[in-house]
Image (cartoon, rainbow, N blue to C red):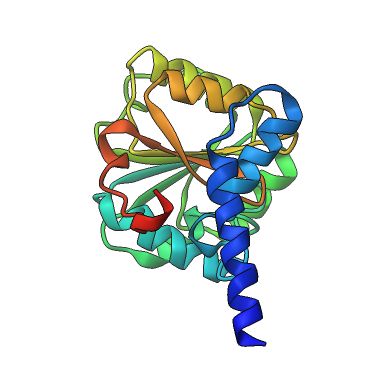
Length: 211
């Protein structure tokens, strides 16, 4: 039985390896490509829970990043699907700021995370103060925020080490925009795509047989 499970896992890993190398020609091919990134690092098993995903994310991404500022855009209640609440729990020099324009969600995050620096509104047009030099990571669950973020990156105004973009429709838009800006898709978890900058992607270790 154990040998059968090991063989099945190997087949799924090989498919994931192949899917990640598919071109993004049409919606069907791109969805398969994203499925390959979902299978990366054993996320289907070890990342089944939120805690399991955090452990993988810390080992594969954060371990190669210096602590600094993290922006969380369109946060919801500040708990469900939030990387910010987990980074605040780590401490270690992380500074989290959140943006939320919806009244109910804004009230929830202020109640659930009273120590988080929270801003009312959207972050689509960036001020000089918001382009912090120690900005390490950003996640957003809003398409308008993601558009503004990509615009800032492509204009060379900001250069976070990693970016998480919510993509429920699994479109290839963000993949192409981030790749043209010098970012590589690292992993996909529950429709959130995580991209790593070209400067850091070589530092993220991957098992040799998966390359």
